Image (cartoon, rainbow, N blue to C red; front, side):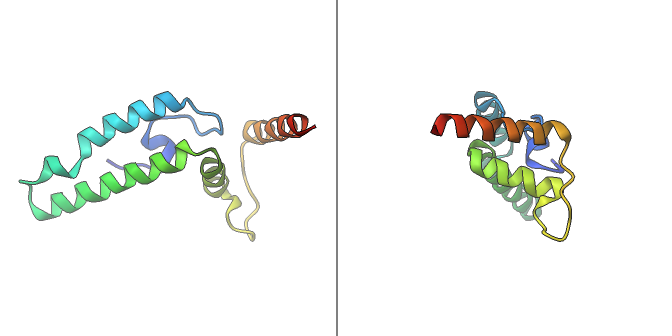
Amino acid sequence: MTSSDYFSLFALPRKLEIDLEELERRFYDLSRRHHPDFFMSAAPDEQARALERSALINRAYRTLRDPISRMEYLIDIEGGGDAAIQPKAPMDLLEEILALQEMLTEAKN
């Protein structure tokens, strides 16, 4: 199990708005398949890999289920986490962020 990012780990599109029910369903599916308890009789190196996979799945789920963490993660993986690097976010992501900011401003008024 290798994944370039948390979104691809769960086979979800890389966007701010995701289907949380689908995320949860995929999380439980991956958790069941890669839980370290199923590797108790495996070799020690395979047990260690199972523990690493399980930790990755849990970390990815916690990040993506929280909207703020998801946004920070998206910014980071799109190149915006380092001030010396100009962000290369896709235009549709930027448009989505702007639309959300406008909705928040309108809701506050």
